[in-house]
Structures are given as C-alpha cells and as structure tokens.
Length: 473
Ligand SMILES: Cc1cc2nc3c(=O)[nH]c(=O)nc-3n(C[C@H](O)[C@H](O)[C@H](O)COP(=O)(O)OP(=O)(O)OC[C@H]3O[C@@H](n4cnc5c(N)ncnc54)[C@H](O)[C@@H]3O)c2cc1C
Image 1 (cartoon, helix red, strand yellow):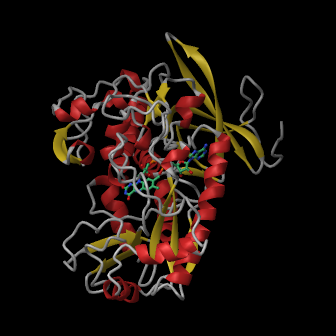
Image 2 (cartoon, protein in one colour; image 1 turned 90 degrees about the vertical axis):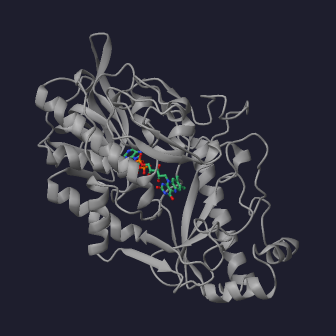
Image 3 (cartoon, helix red, strand yellow; image 1 turned 30 degrees about the vertical axis):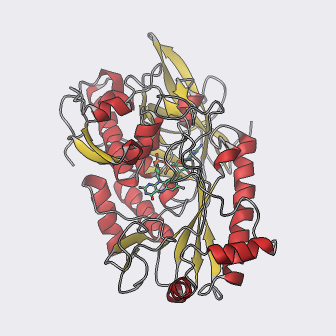
C-alpha cells in the first residue's frame, strides 16, 4: 500500500487503508447529480466531501463537452444557468447568425423545425461552466477532491442490510479512504451501487417488453462529443442548396469511393428493427450544433450500436470505445476539411475527456419507476417533485404527467446510500426519456442532498426518513 507522507491519516480502515478525510456526506462523482447533491447538503449544514476523477464538476456536460443550456427549471439548475450567463459562458445562436440552420438535416436539435424558421439554440462553454462550478463548490465549503478516482467501498453489516463506512479512492498519492455517514452515487453509471454489491440491471437489459427483443443486451450507444472551430456554415448551406445535397450524401459517397471514410462512419439508422427509437442507432450524416461562439460547433460521434459495448463495466469495451471513437473523429474531421465546403479552414478544437454512457447499470431500488407509472400517471405518497409532464418519444411522443417517489433514490440492500442523476432506480426507458437530462439530474441531485441533510439532522439513515411533501423548486 502506498502512503502519502504529507497527509496525517485519521486512522486506518479495518483493511488498513489510511483514512484521509471524513464527512457527514461523501458524494462520488461531480456530474449534475453529484454536484447538486453536494451543494445542497453543504448549504443545509452538512460537511461534504466530493470525489471527482476529472478536473472539474459537471460530468457529461463539462468534461464530456455536452453544453446544451436549457431554461432554468428552478433551484440549483436555474442558479447554474444564471451563473454561467454572468460569467459569459453562455452562447446563443439564432436565425440571424445561422439563417439556414432551422430544419437543416445536419442539425442535431433543430432539424425538425420548418426550414428557415426562427430558432434559439443556447449552449454553455464546457470549460467556462466547469470553472463556475468549481467556484460554487468552493464558495459553499464543499471539500472537492479532483483527480480522485473512486475504486471501492468498505462496509459493515447493519441489521438486515449493510452500510458503507468508507469510500476507497485512488489519487496521485495512492490509495486512501474517506469515512462518511451517508454516501451519494453520482457516478452516472451506478459504480458505487456495483462496488457495494447492491442489485442492478445491466445496460441494455430487458426491463420491460417495450425495450427490446435483443438477446445480446445491446445498450443504447454512448458517445464521444467533439468540437470543431473555423467553420463557415453559410458556405456549407449554400452548397447544400446549390447541389441539392441536404445530407451531404454526394460528398460522403465520393469520399467513400476514394477510401477516405471508414465503414463505421455515417452508417444508416437501424430503424424498424425493434430496437429503441432510431435517434441514437445509426449516424447517417454529420450531426452538429452551435456551441461556444461563431464558427464553432459540437459534433456527435456515437458508438456503433452493433458493437454492443458495455463501457461502464467492461474494461476492454471502455478502451475500445476510446480508441475507435478517436479514430472515427479523426476520420470525420479529415473528411469534412477535405470534402465539405465551409470546412476548409476548420480544425478539431476539443475532444471530450470521456465517452459518455447513455445506458449503463440501472439500480434496483426500493421502488423501480416503470413506463406504466408514467402512462398511468401514478401518484405516490412519497413524491419528491410536483407532477411533471414530459414527452415520451418512444411512446409515439405521448405526453405523460407523473411523480417521482423517494424510494427510487434508495438502493436495495445498502442502508446509507442515495442515488441521483442517471443512476436513479428507473427502468432504462424511463430514465432515458426524461430523468437523465441535465435539468432533472440537478433536481434529483438536490433531492438526494436534501435527503442526506435531513437524515443527518434527525440522526437516522436515508431509509428512515418519512417523505411526505414534494421539494419545492
Ligand atoms: C453523449 C451524451 C449526450 C447527451 N446529450 C444530452 C443533452 O443533449 N441534453 C441533456 O440534458 N442530457 C444529455 N445527456 C444526458 C446527460 O448528460 C446525463 O444523463 C447526465 O449528465 C447524467 O448526470 P450524472 O450526474 O448522473 O452523471 P455524469 O454527468 O455522467 O457525471 C458523473 C461524474 O462522475 C464522475 N465519476 C464517474 N466515475 C467516477 C469514479 N470512479 N471516481 C470519481 N469520479 C467518477 C465522472 O467523472 C463525472 O464527472 C447526454 C449523455 C451522453 C452520454
């Protein structure tokens, strides 16, 4: 075991790991869920340690570059949007900047609008936003450990269930332990749930008939986002019109014939094959959105669905995704610069620090929220939010109004762990269609942080709290 000579350990765990910090609440992962949980609990008076393996909070939305900015939905989400704006980290493009953007088939978000119509597309600058989030945690007094990878837990038996006593983390100084009374799984992939031995369903698992009849358990593909600068989109749009080539098919065919496009790039969608919706299955053309400032766009590079990669629990899958998606990004950048008008002076400005997982482990909690709960508009005595109305595009774009019960935050078999963000106890299609998005991850993070603070104040575990009122946002 390595030891950091600069740290005086607060004793050792039963297995001999030096304990370097202790707190009421230990949050693993600083994505929107973990960030909001840590901030809320600290503001309610808890001591909080947040463990984050990258160099800033924000998860997929900063380290992963996914800077889609939405209107504030209340609470910490609204505060974030305001702070990003004050820091000059929000960029908004409209039809004045990009007259041919609405309805353009290359637009990730705005392709469905009537061509040429007005639009507003706001994004935040991922690194600028990350700086703001670092500052907000500091201002609140959260002890944030960056460059610290959560690796394991130590646990004790506690009645019929088990309790986590320490999170084991790896830093530049070696392997250390952090003692906590309550823990939050903000890893985005339920890593704490897995290490603690709590039950979960693997990504792509058949949690309901509506999901898939795929025997190979192929998850919804994750993706690596990347940014290109120096793009003259007006020139691209002029080409699309002039050559009647809205999806760049002619250029793609020419490049493919010349051997400049690998087979995995620009694959047809696998619609009508009984697998999910077609949004993330296939990638037939360039997929982009304005970000950061004029001439700069974010592009999507998704894992080919056929590869069936489980990047959250298989090291070779994770490594293959990083290798291959970098290769595909490089190939796509070369294609764009060489063949597509408007990209001649473009260059790769950033590649996300990690390949985001869209469909990782789904914990089995004290309640598992299912699509039937949404369809029937089920109400719960322990609802944590006011009823929410969301569009479920896999259910023919039906709008359902539903509530989220507190029991979805409580994994089975471990009595001092709270779930949040993309790691809630929801079936895969319900987490995917609504709750995993940035605004709701902020809200469920606040719910987890508030629950932890209440439990600490009352001297009980999160499962003993009686939740009877939705949290106002
Ligand atoms: C490619 C992609 C595109 C998306 N597009 C959109 C979109 O357009 N709009 C939208 O609203 N949502 C989008 N989402 C969904 C959304 O980004 C995620 O569901 C959301 O970020 C989940 O939040 P989270 O806090 O649960 O986890 P994450 O954002 O994944 O954050 C988890 C954090 O935990 C850290 N972490 C993980 N493991 C460890 C460990 N072992 N030790 C220490 N730290 C760890 C990570 O570094 C990360 O910072 C997208 C997701 C992906 C993958």
